[in-house]
Image (tube, rainbow, N blue to C red; front, side, top):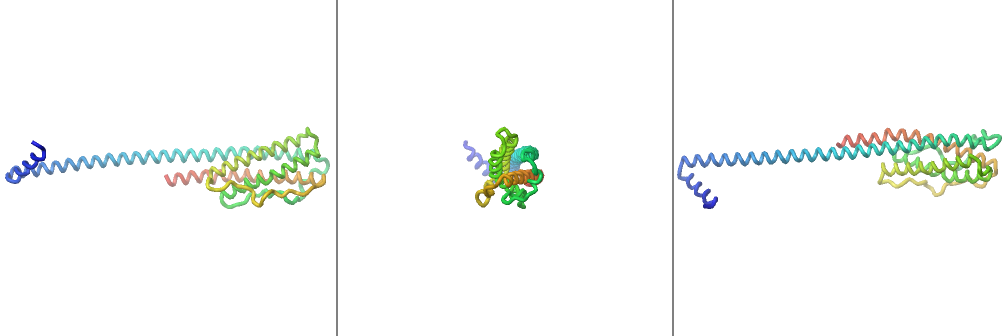
Amino acid sequence: MCGFCLLKKFEKQCDYDESSQFACDTERRMNGHVKSMHFQQLMETAAALLSLLLVMAVDSTRTVAASRNQECGNSLQQTLKLTRLVQKESVDLIKTYKASQGEMAELFCKVTVADVPDPNISGLEPSERLASISIHLQAFFPHFKRVYEQQTDLQSPTSPLLAELTTVSTRSKNLATLINSFYQSLFPNLPVPEPAGGPTTLPPPQNVFQQKVYGCVVLKTYKELLANVSRELRTLKNKVCRRRIQINTLFL
């Protein structure tokens, strides 16, 4: 006999038999209790599974955040290391420059020269100050080229000054590349920093004395810029990378 028919027969028996009616009520309550237990177990299993998925998602996000924070610190440390190297080389370069200029060389760097870039970093936000570093570095490249061209006419081809000028210029371009790469990793939605106002203004044709003064001022000012960059990068390391850690921790 089909299950439905048996159920109907059992219900009819319950309707006509008082003892059967009691048994039917008991059976119904037991069935309801079993269904309730099954539903509760199902909900507990679903809740446990959801909790496990949430824990896995949070752990994965924290792992990614920690990796990014480590990349931030490593990238900035590499940039700071190169900055210190170029800064040291710029100090040696000025000494070599003065030694190759003859008499009155100590006075050359004390003269004020127009059109030499400002060594001071500007901006309020970390993105602005990092962009300022990049723009200032790029602004010096045409001046390095002009000084090298001038000194090529004044020095012998084997002069150590020319070699040191080339080394500092090359490393400075590498430093600017690192700065821009770090800037893009921190602020991917912002444009790459570029000098505003078109090409860098260079001085008009100069006599030998003016060339010697100009070269010394350019190198001295650039050394000051590197000192400012080194100090700024140390500050940014504490502000930018640590702040990213704090933000990630807050949201996780």
